[in-house]
Length: 401
Image 1 (tube, rainbow, N blue to C red):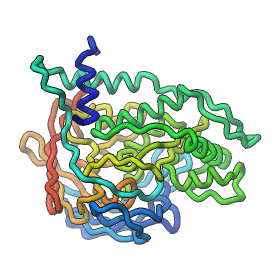
Image 2: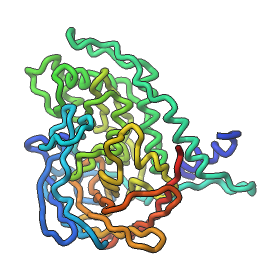
Image 3: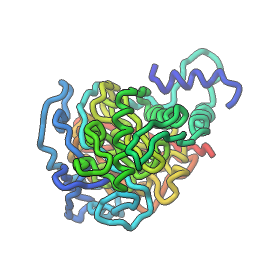
Image 4: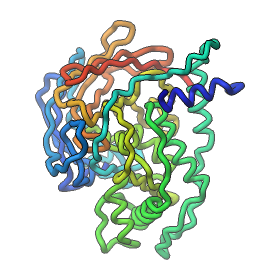
């Protein structure tokens, strides 16, 4: 039984309920029939990363520079290869046209997958009437998001005191990470206090210098070796820790990597480190020993998905439909994948691009709805073609408002 189905069975007993940096990896993208391509950067490189899908364990690779083109199979596609740019708050993507807080993600991960994770919302067959799976999902979504307070930061920029985040803030951040992983049928992760200490130093450095950088120079105010190390291994945001998780999952402005989301949904994630000030945060993700074992992971994933996870209330200026849906894998070659989305048998046009290798998964693709957005009560059937392993799944949107 999967972690998601176990938790759902438990609910049945309840009465109710980036910044591109010079020298980073570059990704080529080709969309529909435009034939255009562009290069963008996505964060620091983990030298242990394997960017070629395999099932035999990690190998080393420094070549993160190429991807194969992906061609959209649906009508009405448009060229998404250049991205839409993004945001203020320290985010440097070459376009400051949006108003989102800045986020940046580290570069790569170590693969480790064996089985596809497409079980969706299931529960144990006990002979009793089946539980209302939508109600249980919404109970989990709303319950885990009932407390979104950032907690209290005990540090001080002027004295370069990194301080720490109160227990409630850390708990709220971890709960959101695991909420999103639960919906994606991934196991929960735990905090490592030592890693959180490093992430806290990272957050202080970003706050003290008013910008985001995976490679902070030694002349930075409040520079510390542990914080510099963590900066190269973390998702970093121009926002405090709890809010940062929602930003990472929407991941607007990172059209060539969707790296933040992929790290949170990574097979290798955990344990994590969490650091935050009142304005900046670092989520230490590289170097985990997780082994979720999924051959591929999608966002939105198969099964029931809250509408509010697609159009996250705290991120009012964008949503997953605008930033793009994603499929990531450590073992399935997605370099030439095609994507078809249907609703009620009708084609739903999407624009498709290959994502940079190594950001939480060896490979990934992104596909963006063109002229449509998800609606509650509807099911969207997704099929990936031209891949080494068949991938087909259905996403049903549930309004948990």
